[in-house]
Image (cartoon, rainbow, N blue to C red; front, top):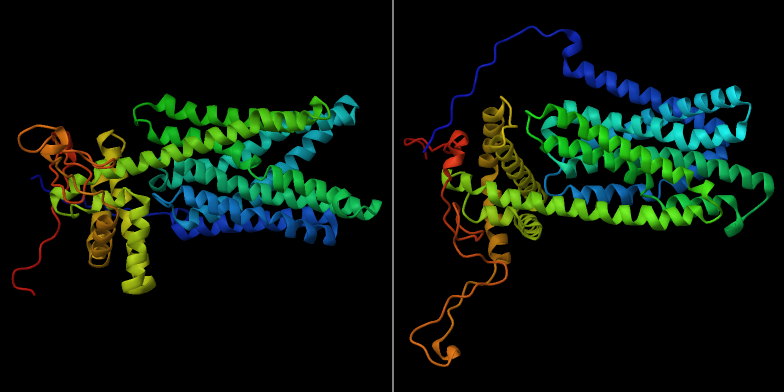
Amino acid sequence: MATCPPCPIRPHRHTHWWQRPWVRYGALITLLALSGLVILALVREQTGTRGFLVGLGLAVLPVPLLVAAFRWLDRVDPGPWRNLVFCFAWGACAAALIAIVANSFATRWIATATADPASADTLGATVIAPVVEESAKAAAVLLVFLFRRRDFNGIVDGVVVAGITATGFAFTENILYLGNAFGTDQLTGDRGIASVTAATFFVRVVMSPFAHPLFTVLTGIGFGIAALSPGRHHLRRSLLPLAGLLLAMGMHALWNGSAAFGDYGFFAVYAAFMVPAFGLLTWLVVWSRQRELRTVRAELPAYVAAGWLTPAEPYALGSMRARRIARRYARRHAGKEGARAVARYEACATSVAFLRQRGRRGRAGAGFTVRERELLDALWHLRGVARPALEYAARATAPPAPRPVPPWAYGHGHGYGPVTYGPYFQPPHGPYAPRHPQATYAPHPRYAPYAPCPPPRPHPHRP
C-alpha cells in the first residue's frame, strides 16, 4: 500500500500587516457595521419610527423559515456558520445600501433626462433595479467562492450561500416596503384586511418570500457548477457564474415588470414562471444533495481499505437517516458533547470524500495532502465516540440479509434457487465491495496517485 508523502515544509516569509487575518476580519466587520448603521438610518428616515418597528416585526417572520430550509439543504456537508452570518449581513446591509443608493440615483437621473417621472420609475424597476440588486448580492457569493474555496464544493453550497444572502436582502427590503405601507395607512386611516400593510404583507411575505432567494440562487448555481468544473477549463469557470447572474437579472426583471402586464399580470407571471421555476430548482437542489451522498458512498471505501474507517461507516455516512440515528445514539450515551463529536466526524468524513473526488478530477490543488491529513487526523481523534454510534446506525438501517429461495418455490428443482436481494442491497460488483456494512472493500488502480496513507499505529512500548 502506498504511504503518505511527508507534509511539505512551508518557508517562512514576512507578511505585511494588511495580510494578517485579524486585519481582514476587522475591516470586513467594520464595513458591514457601517453599512448597517447607514441603511438603518435611511430606512427609518423613509418609514418613520413606528413604520420601521412595524416593518421590522413583520419582515422578520419568514427569515427563520428560509434560513432553516437552506440549512436543511446543507446537511450533507454543512458549511461553517461564519460564512452564513457574513452572507446574511452582506445582503441585509451592504447589498441593500448599494441597491437603495444606486436605484435612487439612477431613477432621478432618468427622470431628469426624460422629464417623465412615471416612465423613469418603470424603467428603474424593470431594468436598473435587477442589474444593481443582483450584482450586489452576487458579490457575496463571489467573495465566498474566492476566499472560502475550501467550503465551496458544488451546487448545493452555491445555492445555500446565494439563498442566505438574498434572504438578508429581502429582510431589509421588506422592512422598507412594509414600513411605507404602514405610513400610508396612517394617512388614509385604513385598517385590517383592507389596509395597504395587509396587502403588502400578503404579496411579499405570504405569496413570494422565496422571490429574492430564487433569483440569486441562479447565480449560486452558476458558481456551483464552476466549482465542479476541472481547473484547466478557465473559460468555462468564468462564463458559468456570469450566465447565472444574467439569468437572475432576467428573472428579476420579469418579476418586477409583471405589474405592467395588466391587472392580472402579477398572478400570470407568478403562476407561469415563478412557481415552475421554484419547483425545478427545488428538484435540482434535492438531486444534487442525493448526488453528494452517492459521492460519499463511492469515495470513502478507499479509506476503509487503508484502515482509517470501518466497513460500516461508508454505508452509514451515505445515508441521512443513519446519520440522524448515530447522533441520537451518541446523545443518549455520551450527552450533547458526544452528539457534537459525531456531527463533527460526519462533516470531516464528508469533506474527505469531496476532497478525494476533486483530487481524482484534477481540482484538488497543491494542498491536497496537507488538507487530507488534517481531516484524517480529526477523524482519528473522534473515532472513539463516533464509530460505535455509526456502527449502531448502520445495523439499524441496513437492509435485510439475502435469503435463499427454497427448492419447493420452483415446483421442482435440486438445491436452492438463485439468491434474491432486497431493494436497497446490491450484490458484490465493481472495484469496490457493495454498499453494505459488512462488505470488504479494495482500492482501485486509478486511485494510485491519491492512495490514502495508513492511520497511526500505537507505540509498542505504550499501553
